[in-house]
Length: 220
Image (cartoon, rainbow, N blue to C red; front, side, top):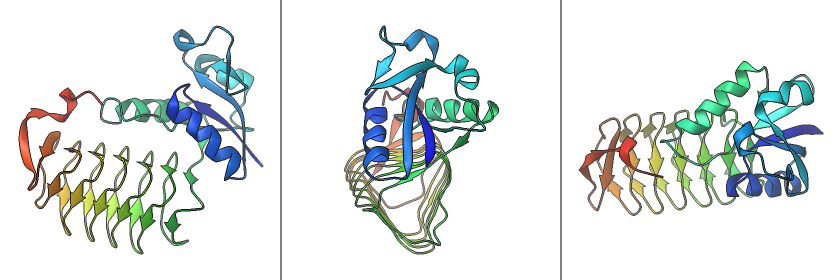
C-alpha cells in the first residue's frame, strides 16, 4: 500500500482524503501545510498535520508519496509551486483517477492529477502533470491537456484540441474540435469557444468573446 501525505486543509484536501480512502490502494497518513497555516490542534480528518518545512525529517521521501490536489488559485500556479517544491524535496507524487471514470489503460496521465468520477477520456487523448478534472467532463479523442490545468464540471473538450498549461475551464464550457487554448486561458462557465485563444486571456459568452481583462487578474 502506498503511504501518502496530502498538502492542504481545505475542501480539495478533504475530498482527496475521502477518495483515496474509499477508492484507491493508498493510505493517507498525514496532511501538510506551511507553518503559518498549521491548525492549533495539528489534526485534520483525524490525521496529523505537519509543517511542510519539516516534512522530510518526519516523513522521508524514500518511504512516502505526496499529493497536492489544490484549488486553481493564481491560474493553477499555487498548485504548481507546491508540486515543484515537493519534487525538490525528493518526493514522488501520486495521481488519483476515479474507478468511475472512463480512462483507457493506454492513456498517458501525468503525476499529481486529480481525476474524479464520470470523466470520459477518449482514446489518443493525453493528460499532463498537475491536472484537476472535476466530475463529469468529456475529453475528446486526440486532444492534449498540458500541465497545471483545471476543468471544473461538465466541460466538453472536442477532438484534436490542445489545452496549453495553466488554463482554467468553468462549468459547462464547450470547446470546438481542433481549437488551441493558449497558455493561461480562462474559459468562463457556459462559454462556447470556437476559435484559438490568446494566452492569459478571458473568454466569455456564446460564441465566446475575449474580455478586456487578463486571466491573472481574475480571482478563482
